[in-house]
Image (cartoon, rainbow, N blue to C red; front, side, top):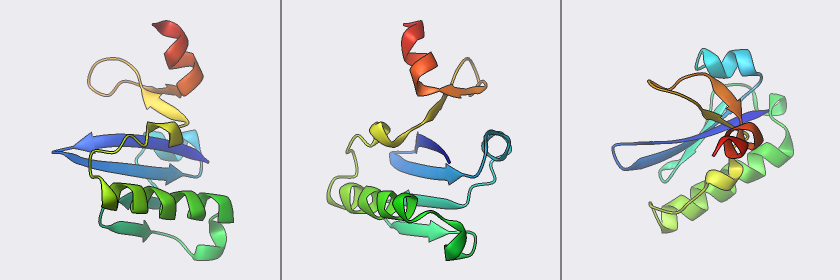
Length: 95
């Protein structure tokens, strides 16, 4: 699964996607914020490990809305205006 972490208006959101294409078109299967975990598909379609990670992200963000959960990200946006998604390893080797 592809995982992204974004902050909007002081709200961190972690999203899980089935594929890079789904991530690029913003079709997530699950998201986690300090408010809870939201699932957009049947539960059996989500790997148990991803569901546990989402629950953990919710708990961490619930306790501290500014907590750094970027360790969950597999991909980040590169470039201006939320440019293309690239693997975290590739993005970190750029700087």
